[in-house]
Length: 216
Image (cartoon, rainbow, N blue to C red; front, side, top):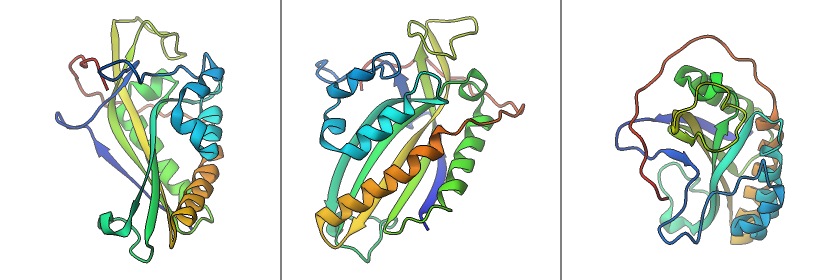
C-alpha cells in the first residue's frame, strides 16, 4: 500500500500559495487551466511528464472540486535522501502540485482544509502502490479577486485569504527510470482520489494573514 502522510505549515515564516504568481523575470507564471485547458502546453513539466499532464488536466475540470496553482518535478540519488526517503532504493523521482479547493467553505476554513488533507491521506494509504509515498501539506493561501474562480461568490476584496494544500509525490527504484515509473504510477493512482466531490462540515477556524508579496 502507498505510504501517505499529511502535515500543517501555517506559521508566519512558512511558504504560502498565491494565485496568480510569476517569477522575477516573468518567464514562469500561473496558468489558469480551468479556463484555458490548452494552456497545459505552456507548462514545461507537463510536456515532459505524461502522468503530470494527466493529473493537471483532471484536477482542473471546470466543475471539479480543486484547481492547481504551481508544480515541479525533480529526481535525485540516494546520496541526497533524507530520513523520510526509502533507503532500500538508489534513486527517487518526486513532484509537488499546489492544490486549491474551489468551494469557499473549504478555502476559507482551516479546519475544513485540514480535514480534507486527513481524508486524502487515509484514502491514499488504501491504494495498492509500493515504492511510492505522498504527503499533503496544509498552507496559507491567497487568491486574487480579479480571477473568475467558483469560490469568488462572496464579497470580494483585492486578495482573498484562505487555505490550500501542496501535494508531494515520490517514487523509488534501483535505477532512475524505475524511480520515474514508480512516481508516475503513484501519481496516476492519486488522480481519481482528488477528483471526488466532498461533503463540507460546519466547523470554523480562520487565521488572519497579511497580503502576499508578488513573485514566486
